Image (cartoon, rainbow, N blue to C red; front, top):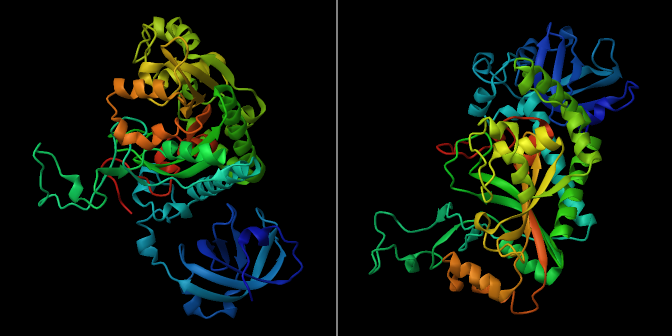
Length: 480
């Protein structure tokens, strides 16, 4: 008999029909009640075994963590906590799990810390918490592709290996086939990359934006959704060395269009999670409430998780200029009482997470879009405003997260772009093709980048970004 998912079985009316399910044993009580889960849902299916009908050898293999195929009649459950159960007629053991070894893992039924779960990242998806997180992550991924598909975007694959640094930060992972022990130096005493695989210095991408701009100037509306890499030695709860970015780019869109797109996009994706992941979100909300009970009242969330997600969907984002934000921060109580780690003294300061969260969580109490930032603290490709000191940049700030989206109207004027690159010491020959886009039918265009893990962090209520990606890559950690 063909097996079906446990999620489908739990939604089926019981008529004593024969069903087959596969899954892993969560518990086996009284040598009679098997709780089986296959990852399709948070809930387990109860499988009732009459022990006198089965060989003792089979029953001894039914331990926590074992993988089973179970066949039996689907009937109305007589116990609490489930509406249906399976009266088992046949059991096949796919794989056993030694109870003594299980005790040393996160599969054991006792409660484990998130730190311990990270040490066994290959097993943590079998826990309720990480099963819920990863199902929400999967749903959000689908919602992203669905949104862009329904709005006329073309899905574009940006290269993973690149010779350009889109952000100008220089914090990149080098890609090379040169043997460090045998690498020859040129006359200047530098590595001769002409002998390397690509014949030039190359890195793992920090962003697909520049390439997306090229394709937007031919296809009109494109997006890329893929892995990006930063060799930034930031061992924090908000940083990863490998993470996923969503980057749409649209020809003929100005900054206002860009802000409209970003807000509509985020609301649509969060709405999809609310419509399709309520069971998992309710579980994660309860988990968060229990976790916050041990915190002082001032550190607890003002809204429950689901309420917070609905708030984002149902309310307009507040839009203010960087200059307005600086005035608010400079005159705020935390700044005046020197509570900020990075005090705001003057215009031009690069806002930190504490400032972003104050604006969102304390001052406006809703998502905020900041725009028109100082040119000196933003990337070279952002369009210079008429004042000569600000650029058409925008960031979206979320409660508990800080910046979740960064974007801009791109500099489409060739002469201005050249001047900005020269001022920053970026060689024209390095980005000749990017400059070419301004020679052949240049036009206003805009785009943004959304750090996917930060969106998942917000949607699940988790506190550490390492807990919303399957196998986190961080400084000194490339396990699994």
